[in-house]
Length: 240
Image (cartoon, rainbow, N blue to C red; front, side):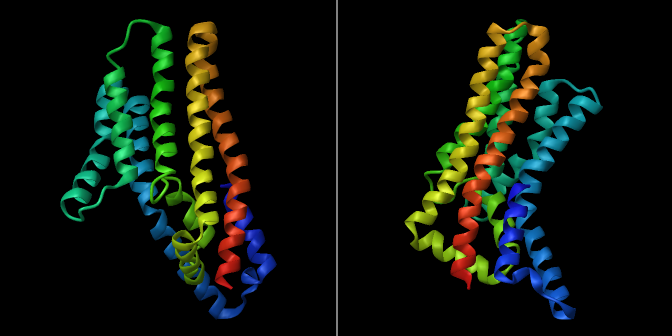
């Protein structure tokens, strides 16, 4: 991920990357463990449902509805547990559940190959719009993936992030912009896919849709990295 390179460079500039000896190795091990813990929500709420979907649909040959239903199990349970036990709403799990539900609903719109191609774009738009809406909430959805790579398990940075998020309007604006970049890229991909579905030959659009998605991810990484670098500099400076 692009933000890893950015934060590594900042570490070298500030001396964080020059730790030696047993203390340095222990600190890095603890930081790695903490970072892995921070990434667990992304793995459980996003990676697991996507993995189940692709395994069921592509490897096992199950239908679209059955595959989406299976991949909805984990986010459905996570959302319910969060509401009943912790009285909180798990944003990532709920997002995946909404996406899967939208996919199941749209799967009924079959028969027209162009409509089926456009349907995939509609699912992307659910994700993109959800990310954009969350950008104006208390915690943008993309923060769950960005924060661990910048904080890197370092307690001083984690505290600095929290202070900036609570007290700096400029920091919150950058945090919001990071999610807006990704949300906009995915919504743009949706628009391009829908337009292409009705203007480009079906045979071409069958592979071009993947190109659109890869391009959207590339734009998200490149533009998002600019913002992530600014956030990283603020966090590192505040942590010193």
